[in-house]
Length: 383
Image (cartoon, rainbow, N blue to C red; front, side):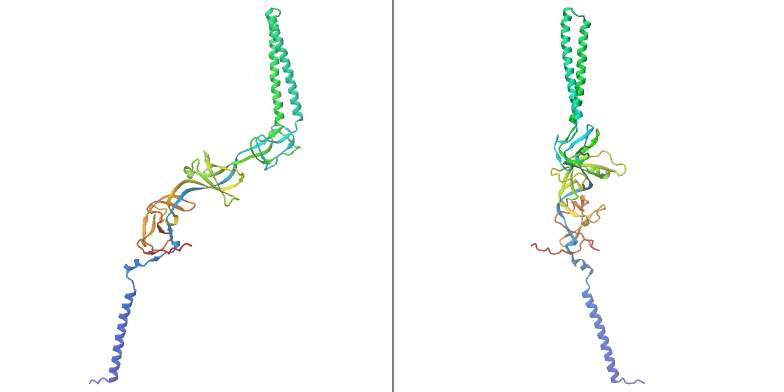
C-alpha cells in the first residue's frame, strides 16, 4: 500500500535538485574560465622575452691583432769588460759606477815610471842604431868609389855592404822594441772604448793588477735588447721586423716598443723554445740592463674587422660556429666564418655571416631558440 508523500519531503527533494544544478553550473563556469586563461601552444612564441644589456653583445668595427705573449729580460746591446793591458800599480781611478764617459776618455792610470824609463832607453838605442846605419851607408858609398877605381877588392866592398845590412836590421829591431815600450806607456793610461756608463769598478788606486785583470764594466744604454723565448709551434708566425710592445716593472702606465731583430737558428732541446731578440731604443736611458719585461708581439693585424667576444660565438671550437642574432625583435641563427683571433683579449674577427652593428645574444639562456620573440633593453639617454 503506497503512502502519500508528505509536503516536507517534497521540499527536501526540491532543495537537493537545486543544489545539484548549481554545482553542475559551477563546474561548467570553472572549465570555461580555465579555458580562457590557458594560452594556446601556438601563442607561446608570441610572448616576448625581455633581455638585459648584459645578455647582449654588439658586433663592433675594430682593429684586431693576433698577439703572442712573451717574457724575458733587457740587456744592453753593446757592453764590455775593460781589462788591464799591462801589469802594475794603479795610480788613479777616475770614474765610479754610474758615471757617463765618452770615447777615449781617461778613466784610470798606472804608475808609469819603469815603463817611461824603458821607453827612453829604447829611443836612445834607436837613435844609436840610426847613427850606425848612417855611418855604414857612407862607408859603403866610399868603398863603391874605391872599387870602381880598383883600389879595393870586391871582398872589401862586400864587407861594407854587409855592415849596412846588419845596421839596418838592428835599427828595425830596436824600432820594434821602442814601439812596444811606447805601447806599454800608452796602455798604462786606461781609456773608454766607446760612449757609455760605468756599470762597475773592480779595482782601486794603489792596488796591483795583472795583465787582463778586469778593471771596469762599461755599457751603452742607447740601445737595449729584449731576449724572450717562443714555443716552436708558434715560430712560423714570428717574422723579423714584427712590432713588440713591452710592459716593464716599475713603468706601470708606460709602454715601450721594439722590433724583432734576430731569431735564433736552433731551439733549446729541453724546452723546445726558440730565443728571439728585440731591439729597443732607449735614448733617455730610462731603462736599465737586467730589467724583467712582459712583451706582446703582433703576429698579424686586421683593420675594420667585425669583432665579437669569444663568449658570443656558439660552437666556437666546432666545425659550424654560429651566433644567435636579434633581428626584427626575434632570435635568428646566423652561421659565421671566423677570422683573426686574439687569445689575450678573447676577441675574434667575423669574416662572413654578420656585419658590424648587429646585436647578438651572449648569455646562455635555456631553451632560447630561433623564432623566439625578444625585447631589447631601452637605451639610456646620454648626458
